[in-house]
Length: 345
Image (cartoon, rainbow, N blue to C red; front, side, top):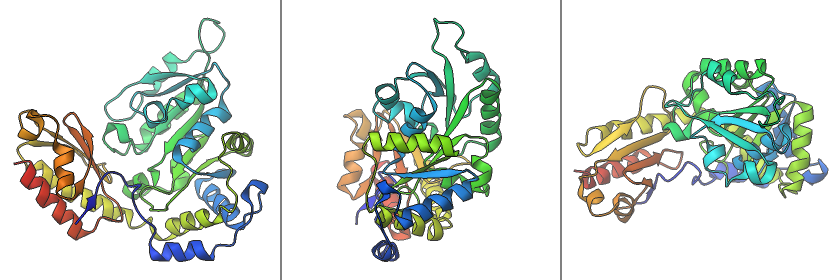
């Protein structure tokens, strides 16, 4: 048995999703006449309480379009030191938009509004890059997959607005956060000018993310999507998968969270492991393995050893991640726990 915890992006379309994709009416989305894409964009914009939305191939592209559409080359962006935009998007902020990124760290993904305000450069002093945009993230992968409390996000966004900044939320796993908090997408998106959302993680679609915002910003993002080669033709096939996931897979995210909790509790019972997991976690389980353990002492063999027994995880240097998703069954979870118990004694 193979249990793939590497990411919630490894999911495969269900049979029902494949049927929806096969039946989807399509057109040429670059010309704006794919009815399934248009319907999906309208649906998500409406649910988010925004004027418009744009379907894109990936979350990275959605984030980079948000940056490009709301800044100019030489501007400064404030973001969390462990954010996906800063650490896992190939330097796109600099290469694509010519931006200076100023990183601010915290243990829980939240950023203090007063501190943010003190860091803003208003552009009057030519020595400093003018600060134009604040980017936040929820859930926060780099801080252990936590749900960042909405109140702290709203305070930070308000402080940014008061300083004349626009705001973007990297909501790649926001659907997971909403499954915990019970908030609506409209409520979660309200403090932000733009929000990116991913369909190909917990929701289980094969491809696709979406960017929501006002008409003007999304129109600019549309142009830059074309510039970056992100315009897709008969993309209704992909939009149908995303729409199916929104309709049928949102409620089941709680199952991933429940299984993640089971895994975290099992790991927490092992003397060689430490678990980064708390009450506002979702489907990501981060854990550590003691440096004195044989799989660490003789070189970091934790990932390779687990893979030999059919359990795929990511990480290294003593810190590892397991992502729960719709392709992980109860039987698979039981097998994975048995393997990790044997390895980490």
